[in-house]
Image 1: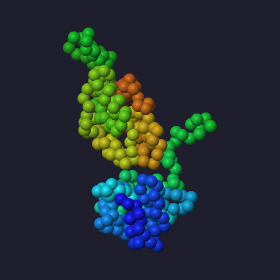
Image 2 (image 1 turned 60 degrees about the vertical axis):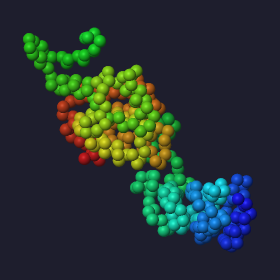
Image 3 (image 1 turned 180 degrees about the vertical axis):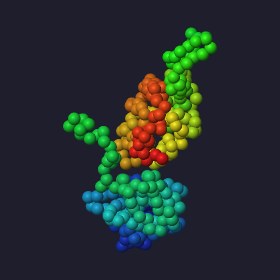
Image 4 (image 1 turned 120 degrees about the horizontal axis):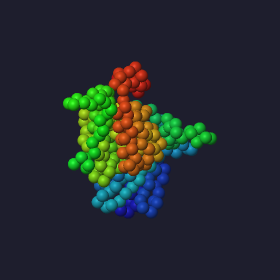
Length: 163
Length: 181
């Protein structure tokens, strides 16, 4: 698909909310404001000329240096084999964004996973609870403020090695 | 026949025409030792090593553990082989609780003993945090010879166990410390 046609349509519809449209050689990355993210994805889904009707994945990335939580959505147009990446930034202290489940039912478990590991709250999600980790876990382990190692471990303490 | 099949030795006792008198504890110990029914709780690569141990080459059946029990209610020995995720913890504990006394636990491999290389938020750092363990077999994974060594240690425990042990206050205190019953 002509990237210029996507750029034009998206700019026309969401102009002031689009922060950047970059092409890294493989596919477009559209950085959009949090409030218009779901609307933009619905537009890419519904617009006949675009037709991004497959959700490859969605995930978060934690940037503690800038106190941000980035959300990524990867969409795929299977007919034209064209992909696009939607990117938006939330605050890392209380990350919250509207659910994508009203556009893609497949987002249900992916959002639960993102909630489980990063603590992103998806407002309007039908069943937002942990999906992989134990239910009584109190942390969101892939956030960068938590150490990777299990703090219960005793055999790695210095005294075990005579230090 | 007798030179092919090795029979276990009877415990010391008084023998005469038509009778044999010995210590009941020793007879029970001998019987338990030579007919342990293991429940294999295999979750990863140590389980593959266990399959080799049960196979014809290493043949665990030589030690009276011919019959694997896949119901915890019939098993004497819980063999935990592999990484136990924290989410698997309650399942393992339930399996342990369902086993009837007397029961023994063999922890096979670095992961079951200490968490091994999986020093991370999702993995139980040793099964002895949730259930009592009798014998530890280290290794990543241990060779079948090591697993057999562990079984032989369990056999020693089964053979020499005293009758009162499982009803003693010390044993109950030990179970209490794990919050079992």
